[in-house]
Amino acid sequence: MMKKPHIDSKKKDILQAAMRLFATKGIDGISVKEIGDAAGVTDAAIYKHFKSKQVMALEAFSHYCGGYTRLIDYMAGQSGTFRSRFHRLIDEVLRMHDEDQYGMLLLAQQHEIFMEASRSGERQLFDALVAFIEQGIERGELPEQDARLSAVLIIGAFNQMALSSLHGELPAHLEPLAAEVKQRFSHLLGQL
Image (cartoon, rainbow, N blue to C red; front, top):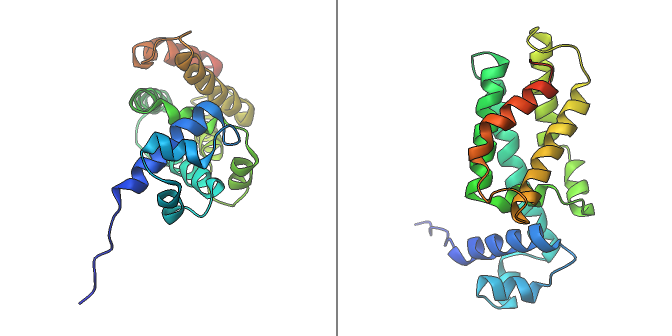
């Protein structure tokens, strides 16, 4: 009889604490001990689940990056106009932020671990957003434009909204701003 694998809830606690600290202080700005203190575990418990702080950071980055990438790919595959799908994407991204503000903040980090992950060959959210915008251009729903530049501007704006929310320059919850965000992003993409 095969044993069921033991799922340690501490791993999730450790990862949640690490994501929050990585997002707010950066990978190099915290120690394994600080992560353990925030998660309520010892260093030994952390090393039971993760070989190093860098492995933990990579898992956290992959978790969020994968989630946002799958969301964009999902919206790109749905029926409807580009505008309606893009607006649903904005609603979902803002909802995800409001549920867990640290994900977007973590993705804004420019640490070499994340840059290395971006070159790993796995589909990244930037590539998914570029493809989604290109789909709108190809279907004649968006004017000709540099889809890569548009994607950079959109991702940068979302990252800055997350930072501004954290620092109190914008509300903690961004969903109430959805209508204005949709309007401004639609203008950016040439949808007047």
